[in-house]
Image (cartoon, rainbow, N blue to C red; front, top):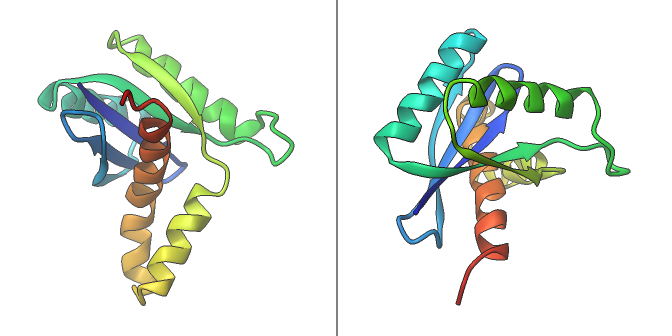
Length: 138
């Protein structure tokens, strides 16, 4: 069963996908946001192309665990997606995932310009891998 991971941001959506067994997450791509309609159409194409059965979406929370404006925007995006496709959506706490991804890229000496294009997909990979690790059936 393939699972898709999303890191939904204001300007970009990081996308990661699991292997068919649901053990590992790999970065798939970073989608530059244009508008809600085209963003959702692109996500649906990826879901259909890879026969994805479940979606894990990073939910930005405040450090005290509450859902703020950014979290509400992500949930609104997911609600719009659910109007177009019937798929299970699981929210995964994404606090600090983008910072962790950024740190890895800095440590790897990736230029700021190149980091901008891949940090969101790497954050989506962290989000998805966290979910896969917690839900692995041994």
